[in-house]
Every structure is written in C-alpha cells, then in structure tokens.
Length: 283
Length: 268
Image (cartoon, each protein chain N blue to C red):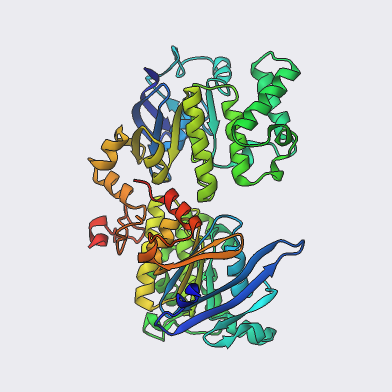
C-alpha cells in the first residue's frame, strides 16, 4: 500500500533557478526508502519540502503530494502543522540543534505532546520515559538531563525517541548518522530499523552513506543535479545499476576486499578544463 | 611479543613512538602505553571510535600535547628530550591535516596567504618537487594548488568561498609545501560526502606515490583506512588492541574488537 505519492515536485530558488526538476516517487507503508546522492543533488530539500519545511525564499511546486488521503501540496498551514510531529516526524544530521540547549529532554518531549495531544501530566511523563527507554536510554534519568550532558550518539537516539514518540507513519531521517562514528551510527540505525518494524512506520532515509543503504533499505532512488536518475529495489540497484553515475557512486565507497589502486569518482574534478572522467582514473 | 614483530617494516624508520602515556587533568587516561613505528613512504592507518584516544595520540606525537611518559623519535631525533626552540625546528618535519577544514584556515587571510604561511615562516623557498627554484611566491602557490587539482583563480579567494572538499585540498597542499617527513591525517575525509571522499583519498595516494610521503592516517572509517594503509592499527580505550598488515585483516587471529568493526563495515 502506498503511503506517500509525490508527483512532479519542483523546487525553485528566489531567482527562479530550478533546484529540483520535477521528481516523482512513492513510499510504501512500512518500507525503508533511501534517497541517495552527492551534496547539492537536492535530496535534503526535496525531503524537507514534503511537509513544508523549506528554507526562506525557496519555492515549491507539485502536482501532488498525496499522504493518508490528503494532498500536502494544497492543504492549509494549520493542517500541515498538525501532521508534522505526529504523522510525519523528522530526524536531522545535526543532533545538537534537535534540542534547545537550556531545556531538559523531558521538558522538550512534554512540549511536543502538549502541542498535539490532550494528555495529563502523568500520561505525558510515562510516554516520555517509555520512548527514552525504547532507544536504550535510562528513561527516568535521561528525562531530567540537559542535551550537553549526553554524548552525540545518545543525543541522536534521544532525537529518535522524540520523533517516534507520536508514532508517525513516516519518519524522515536526513543523514542521521553522518556526524557519528561507526559504532554509534550502527546503534542508531539498528534502533531505527527495530522501531520501524515494531511500529510499522515508513522511513525516508536521506544519506550518502551507501553502506547503511545496502544494509537497511528496501528501495532506493538516486538523485543527481535535482533529478532522480534511477530508482528501484535495493538488490536490483546494487547488482545491476543502469546508469554509469549510479555504478560509480556505489563504487566510490572503498571496499574491504580486493582494494583497488584508486577509487572511481563521479562527476567532474575541480581543475578547470580538465575534468578527470572516472574511466581514466580507473585505468 | 607478536605485536612487536609487526614494527619491523623493511623501509627506514621515520617515526618511532615508545610507550606513550597521556592522562588528562581530572584523571582520564586517554592514551595508555602506545608504541608504533612508521616507515619511509609508508601509510600507517589508525582506527578507533570517538574517545578511543586516537586524536590524543596524534596530538602527543605532534608535540601539541605534552605526554606524561614515553619517547618520540622523528628521523632518529628524540623529540621528548628537546628544548623549546630545538623542538620548534624539529616539529617542522611534521605536518597535519585536521578533520574540520573550516577550522584550519584563518578566515581573514586569502587562500594564497594561508597556503604560503609555512614556507614563509620556515624561510623555505620553492619546494623541490615543483622543479624550478626561481618561482615567485605567486607561481609557487599556483603550482601547489595545481598539485591538488585546484585552479589558480582560488588564490585570492577567502576560505568561506570554497567548499569543504576544496578547503581540504588546500590544507593538503599546505601540508606538502614544506616537504615534511611525516603528515598526520586526522579524519581528513570525515566531513566530506562519499564522492568527494573518494577524490581526496585518491589525491592523497597520488601525492604519496609521487613524493614518497609518509602518512599516519587516522579515521573511524575502517574502509577508508584500509584503502589508504599498508598496515592498520586499532585503538580502543586508549590502548592498541590490534596491529596487522592489510592482507591479514580478515585473519582469524584478529582481536574481537577488530572483528566487530569488520562486521560493521563488511556489508554484503
């Protein structure tokens, strides 16, 4: 069953220069959908634009952003605000700014519930503790902590707890592990996969870490310069990529076995007039 | 001790650390008795999580941090015995590239001035690998940028006008400009995305082969370390838990922690 259906999504700069050139994709309920690409390919702003979170000045156009029987492209800002934080939740790369520095985690979780639900103080507190426990933090203790008292990995897990607390149908995770080391990243992703399966929530995973894509994703779309150039089942993309760009992007992660002398590179090199193409670098 | 055998590395030695300890104020033991050697033209990879002590070790060997105990031999000179002014001279033989390229440039200096700072400050002329010794400063700077595949038009730019990958290239150009014996690369690609990382890693390898550079490559990314290094060293809780040649990485005698890391990075 399709949870989200996006048709002809375009994003423009203030000067009407297009950043995203009309992309189509759909996410099924409960699946892990990875949107991958280089910095600047437009993957993050596409995801932000879904729930109307574009930076100032950028403009969105879309034929349709269908989710749960509503068209997010045309509903009112008020309805959109109700959706954000409940049915659509976000986790960002920068876990430091997911929390206000001078509020405890508990206070911030409380705030979200107060905004969206009419629960008693006890209900809200129990919900926060449970959510924190689920991400492997000591709920009762972490509840009273300030963000700076937690490590990066812990803070990102707390951000995940905050996002999953309202049991969203769609979790949009924008490079959630880029700023973490491999071990902490693995912990966060394992948790995300577990919560996704338990709660049946779909994940829109934006990343350039192809290793986690290979491990967790069900389907993949590859973005380049504002367009989706290829998409499909993970196995199909990894085993038989149709586009040269996709093939080189996938190969640019250093392998552990059969280490090549040089890595394939995608796109053009910086040196003017002398774009080093991937083929010559591989030779 | 089997680990000790691993230090015998054919090529002449550039750096030798013996039993380095570092405890921070407050009692946290960051580095606990690390010994290592790096050979001429070799890249030694150092893998570890955040907090494993790998960056502290790097700061100790660069003598940016005073160690509690231990010996540092750079080109057979004992850095641990040198006085301040001698140390300042000896230290020039080492250069470093840090993770955060924005933090390694003075935002008020042009790329050209930042790039030439080590050469000016060490009263060195044109690096020998650029050939012609009669180059003007402008020419030296332009040729250094060319070495890292950047066009000369960036010379009069400011750091804020360059992307992260471009700044990291300038940092590399600056590091090679004084022809150091050793370059410490502390997570040089951690803040870059995968395609830019591939380019920077290729560039580092090209330069290493062309100029015979020796590297200490530090990262939590096992696959990047594995790509760069002939030998890999694994740190956990301030100790070295494993040291092996690249081809022995999957051998059964690896430390359990190394195997754990391999499992994370070896995704089928």
